[in-house]
Image (cartoon, rainbow, N blue to C red; front, side, top):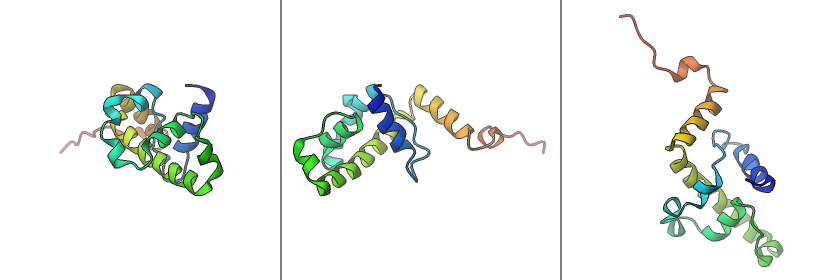
Length: 116
């Protein structure tokens, strides 16, 4: 990922209440299967995807702060949906395990054998 894209994903994953999101790779974000049906679910889906991928925004978006706020909300929603499918992959599961093991002792993440 480019520096700009990495910065957006790093920023997003660090937002309050989004700390447990991981940085989804660009291929997963752009995967047509992962994006199917999301046009109906996420308002302004194309612009939200452009924001996540740090593509150049439309000029009208730059001039309209209310529209930019709506696109940011849609980008959060779209990233959440993308995250949901990503964490089910091998890379996503590994990344989430690494991220959560920094926050929780490994004893809570592994099954415990009880002697009784």
